[in-house]
Length: 248
Image 1 (cartoon, rainbow, N blue to C red):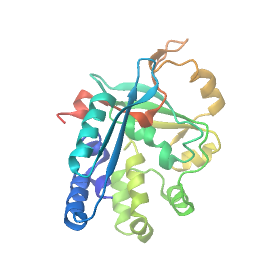
Image 2 (image 1 turned 135 degrees about the vertical axis):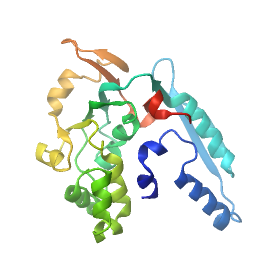
Image 3 (image 1 turned 90 degrees about the vertical axis):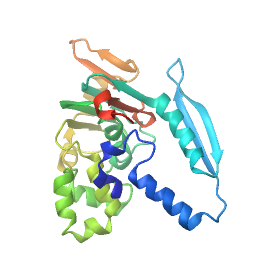
Image 4 (image 1 turned 180 degrees about the vertical axis):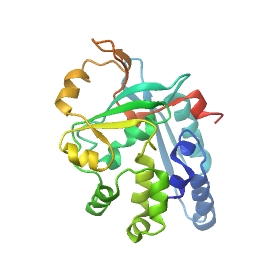
C-alpha cells in the first residue's frame, strides 16, 4: 500500500524506491544478525527473440540486488521518444489465470501508453480476478476505479483496510482514465470484465485479427493499415517513453 500511494509510475524503472528503502532498513535493523543468501536471476531476449538467462547474482548484501537490477535495467527497459497509441499484449494461458497476475501487461506498458490510447490484452486463460476467493470478491465489488476514488473509499471501508494489498492492486491496475484497458479473456464474460471497469473484446475475434503466431515482436501493420505494437511477454520487460522514465 505504501508503494501504491507513492504511485506505480514513480516506482517503475527505479532501483531503489521508498518501499525498497524501508525493506533494506528493516532487514539491516532486525535481521542483520541472521544468515541469508539472495539469488537473483536476470533474463533478456537473444537475437532470435527468445528469453534466455543473462546473469545470476548470489550474495548476502544489498549490492547483490543492485548488481542484478542494474543489468536488468540495461537489458530489459525499452525506451521510446513518443508514446504508443495501440499496444497488443499476450498473457499466456498456462500462467495468467487472474487479473491479479495478468495485469502485469498494464504495469509494464503504462509508461509508454499514449493518452487516449488502447492496451489490448489477449488472455486465453483468464478465469477470475483475484488469486484467492476473498480478493476475487473484493475486486468484483470495487473494480479498478483509480487512485482518488480508491483512496477516499479506503478511509471509510474496513474491508479495504483489512485487504490493503488488494486495495493497492486496484490502484496499480487502473489507467487513471488516461488510456483504455481492453481484455479479451478466455473464460470471463463481457459483464464481468466491464463490471471491474475494463473494456471487453471477444477473444476469438481478436486472435483472428492479432494472431500471436503471425505477429512480430514490436511494430506491426495490419492489412487495413492499423499500426500496433505487439508484446508477446509483457512480464519480461518494461516499456516507457523517455519523458516518463526521466533521469533514473
